[in-house]
Length: 451
Image 1 (cartoon, one colour):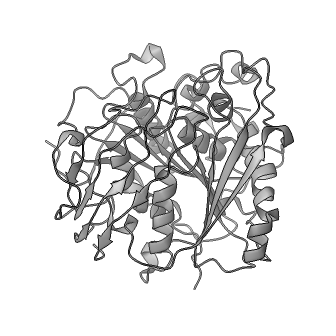
Image 2 (tube, rainbow, N blue to C red):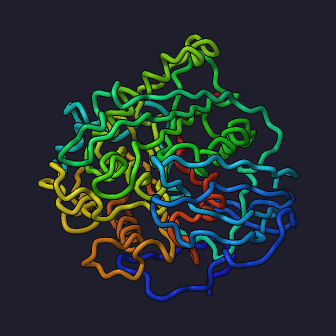
């Protein structure tokens, strides 16, 4: 039986059989109750924090979240987390903000794709900045069946960064106009962009960055907390570079035939190019950003560019790194939709007939891409993730997809980290709250953190 601590696991390809333990989401416990102990993937988080975290509100029309709503639960590690809801509202894929009241003590398929969006030369296998991070922290892990909000993600009174908000109308875009008539119903939309520049960022320094799909929900809130705490960490091994977090909402809808599905589930460099050529320049040119940071710019180094998300937003982050390693090389992907979710009439179907399922099966993109791409990817699947009882033939088993992807990465010797969340369903926030801090530290290991 699995204990509450993370354990290295030998997760072989194929579907996880049986349910190990029960979901932690049904336990009682009033908000604010103090817990004890607690762990994270790399290190034990000390207790001492108390309070509540208000999660994003659920809604209709978004992706299925299992379970959709849970009562408040007492977590180990000195924190209590309020009841969890769905990750996404039904309209436009926008996500509600989480607020915290936590206080307390610190406790072609192969070589062809490597040219990236511009069709240029293959990117170097090494980095243009930083050092080889080695294999520390690589591999397969389990989380749960009990979970705690990691100490690194609590509010500790550290200096906070600046937040900027802007919007991008589809009418002004050259890449996602909402008028892909053969793939989606014609639509117009305005995309919201939330930008968090951490306090430790120095104006004039080309900023590393992470793009968070689906707007400002749980992953974005956790990343901001990690930046507040870990960019000032005195232990170099636990210090993050002051990267800029960018929450980008989708064009709306969900699944095949939706604008969100077109952006996130298509096996294409299109979304990465959109971020690179439209979103990032819009932020650099934003009047409020320029007023606060007159010499602000983003780094062009792909080793300093990453993406994060959950579900199809995670698939987008994964694909940004895999198909555009000349632009982005880091990804955090919770409950990643590495399944056959690409639109059936997508032009990319000729090259990737089963969509993201082709990463680990059929075409076996990970296994058959030589040499290895210079990417670094954290991904997660949960014990009762979407389609966890579906047969292989369905190509819609998120758990199987996550395990097979991990096995493919392992066989090829990639820098990867896979976390299996025990007792949880799709995009459950508990595993994100327990692992995001260490996921970020692992992801950015080897990248310069500054003085």
